[in-house]
Image (cartoon, rainbow, N blue to C red; front, side, top):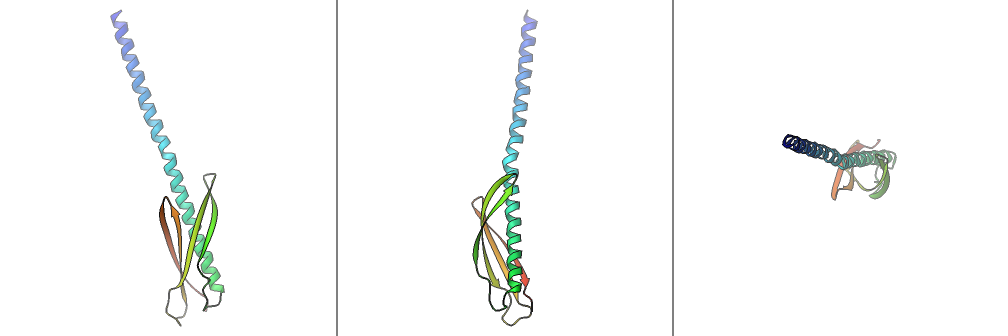
Length: 129
């Protein structure tokens, strides 16, 4: 009788240890999902910011050389892992070359907020002569 009690105690400890290992693995894998979503969200926001900067530079190329388009704020809804996410971008367009330079260089600075921090990209492009 004593051997059966010892064996059942050992089997019970093995089952508990196995369940603890499985629980640890499940929690570890589960914690990866929020991190991957935030990474995908940041990548999507940066992609949208680069696209916006390119659009601004293209519009500036077709505008009159002496006039800048101006600073604006753009709201955008992006789709990240099947979820809609709202993002607000503000851009600033500055002349990046001295007056009278040929070609005239423009610098677009796009800013947005991600996880409580302000992120920023800059693109420089030349306007058509």
